[in-house]
Image 1 (cartoon, rainbow, N blue to C red):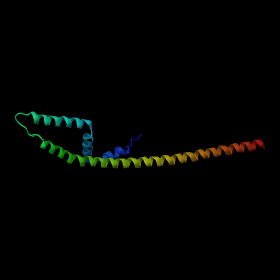
Image 2: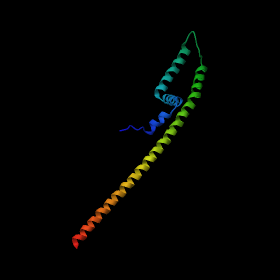
Image 3: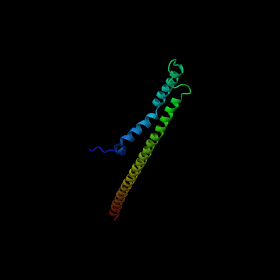
Image 4: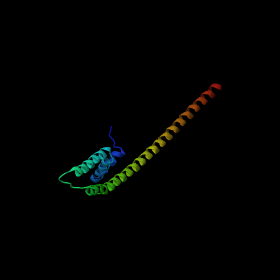
Length: 136
């Protein structure tokens, strides 16, 4: 039996390196691990800058930290939007595949229904014929 690929596997094979990277980045940034790690880094950054006796690389109000966050947001937003656009494309492809499956199933059910009706009519014709032969 031949192993056929579903629509998702076919779609995944068509993605470029940049598309796969954008999806990975969006998936990573949308996780609790990212939030927790970023929170820990921010606390460390602020803590080291507040209690450091000799060297403060980013003194209060942490302008460098704000610049880092602004840069992160400037790159994250378009990457996440690219990933969402691809998700919309995947959803459209899946909806079309589901629609086609439903159409095929409907046609098959209609064909089976016609076949069953034909069998019923044939059975009834035979029963009527047997009854008529028995009465005569």
